[in-house]
Image (cartoon, rainbow, N blue to C red; front, side, top):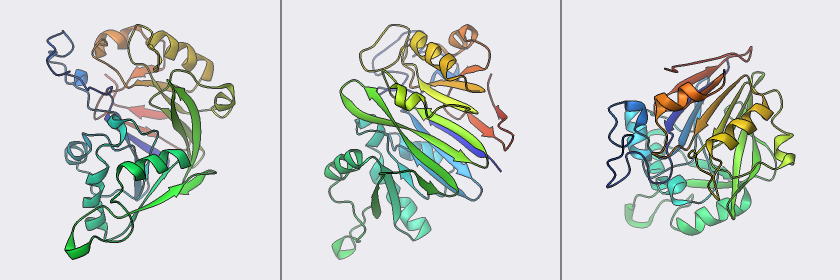
Length: 270
């Protein structure tokens, strides 16, 4: 069966184009240079879930015509990864169910503090709010037949995680934000079919990997196919694509990658 990955957003916290910027990438006619904030939609059989709910979440759901979300996984509590969380309530209505949200205990605690009105009980007097069951992860969990394992990473000084996804013999690593991957986490990333990794810009950054750091790390991980994500306006899709080693690709909004049972993947790379 395998996994289908849909990249709903591939940009950094300000998105691309950036407000008030007339640089070549922000004004580019190439649609692959238009990047909403990072978000991943994962489909396995009839089930599906998202990793993070950025401020662009509503538009991402509409553009991809997504009508079902069985669960939400959070990587960390920065605004560009959580501020669309309220829009999950539409899926409560469509599915007539409470939706679980997963993440490391300290991440879910902060999300719940920020969205303190969200819970499993409907609002008084017919008030409409998301119905969420918060499920702190202290060990791997299985959702829709996909085993999800937390991947602790460094992201400046903020607690942050990626995810290892396993289903039908397929292994996918997803780390959208990080400045460094600890050896203990790298040890979990062997024999991957697909690896997705932060690559903010060419210049070094204190809380994100730059392109050179990301490429070096991806070469060390050695997945069959690798993808760069969380890209700022310094990076032109076409130019960067031509600079990467074989089997490394630049993500873009709307990209779909299917990973089958044999571990092979096919996407819409251009």
